Length: 319
Image (cartoon, rainbow, N blue to C red; front, side, top):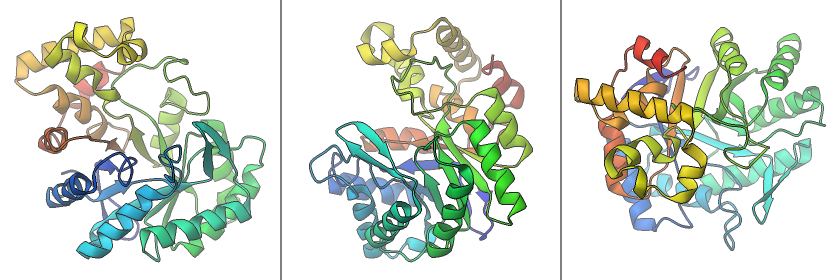
């Protein structure tokens, strides 16, 4: 497992386990075994959010609650680099963003209670509220960091100009800066309409350059591009789900698929080695967030956790 050392001395694994469906769609026994195997393999980063699967009946907070119980029962809180997100609630599958001070403080208290902990390693705002001044948001984030004993704060689905403005304000007022940036990021090329959600962002050149220059850590969700490259290699294009084809079948991604298949044939590595290595070996310091529905998927990921993809090969998939 590859790691990044955090300011509190903890080791952040460059593979992070996303547990959005734990407590709702993933059976408890399977979820528990996934967590056990992930930690046993050296994984430390576990990522959740207050509103995950809120659209399931009584789903709000269930992922945090399951994880909190599991950590308490297994006495492993200190092994975990715990990341959660707030500021968003759902009405059906529509997002409602509230980054007001009072709303955020209420959510953080709920998250700490659900997670059965008195501190967080990383706290992120799940969406931006563009009409709310970044100055107000950063003042609130500092309060949240103090209350949650967070050494690291960040944002998810924020445009680069908003991140820049927020950190400019933080620097001049001696506040904690945004150090973590979570966004769509994978070996795949994206289109503006690919995910049918205008409130999300993806890793563009401006954001990547800013993160490198300011030593921000990128947290890649959809790090495996929904499994497109692995499934295309093992199942063939004809057997891909229609939604995956709709999202991923672009000329750019087909070229990358050909490149990936050729590299696998040449080196004997697996498609997962390349897909995850693109993130974990990237010059942009980051961690690949993965979500699994079976132990076999998790084992495939863990087998690739140490794979080093040469920087020139990483660069070949940037174009």
